[in-house]
Image (tube, rainbow, N blue to C red; front, top):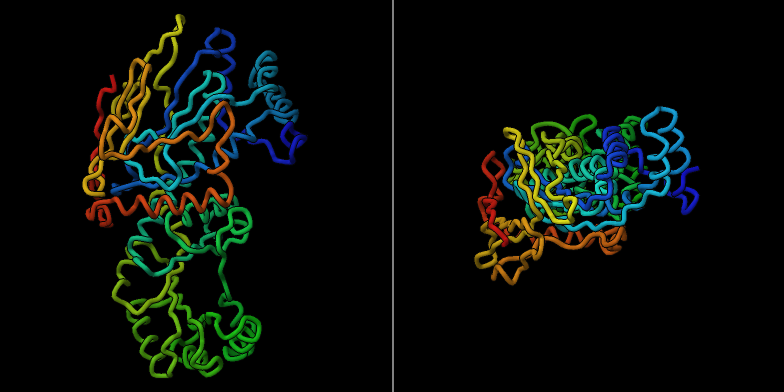
Length: 449
């Protein structure tokens, strides 16, 4: 039983990490640098897929996972058996608890190249071991949220449902449903996502339901008897035109909806709409599902479609399965206690040293730049008062090791969803295009001193 399991039943997350983080910790305890105060920053050098904006997601999940980042007896026994670290480091890990601070962009916020999405401050020993956990959560969830936001833009006012669980690993599917909901989807097919995060769930029947019965009509009658006339009937198991006719004959003109999962969707949707109207089912909604992505959704903008169900594309980031974020040391204290800005200088993989304060400049409510004030001395970070008309982007997510509960759980998800809807309104029109391009707004660095 792990320490966390002994306390509250939650599984430890301490081994959701890379070995080299613990070997660095081990070496730092040996040479005396483990207690140096450090600032780590999580950011993206560029936007994946040459997209025009990114969406931060996973923050609330990460805070909960950091709370459970404790080394219990099972974890310590594994590290000892595998000779990962020495006995002194095992003693340190047995008492490990992150007691530092984390500031960053709110979940649902937009980000751009260089945005200081997460800033982790603590001792080197406390902060370095969180690298893999932070990156695995934010890289995955932000990639999903960014793809979902683009689909939401393409869909306009038409509802979107996430239904890609069978195209992702089981835990990733739950996280993907959460990220998609934050970025504009209205429901998920995943019940665990509904239970854990309060996301509305949806779903009626698959083709197997129709194939189970002796006839399509029998399947439709059984579904309506179970779920009511407002249900959505899947009409393309056999012949779509015959399926629509059968659906209306069985349910009447008050049928809630039909779903189409195959064919040339613009053409099929138009034909189905015309047939429904001819049969008097003018209020019956049409949902399409069939390997949709943001481009397919955009191509259906002029079609008589009422809602979309998206699977594979959204849970895999629609071609960009990771956000490409990195976690770098940007400042540390020296032996005398003074702060030193540090940066990686590798070609095409450099970082910018110093603690950052981030703002979004606005012109009549429209975003114009990502303004990042860089402090080398750390005496005073800039505030929004230094940039009239700008919006401060960073909030305190964790102080002295305690997360802000308002960003966690189902309530945190709803807050992130609402925040995303607000800030997306700030995007300039060019940001809403789906074609590959430079970021919608530039990242501008200024000296904070």
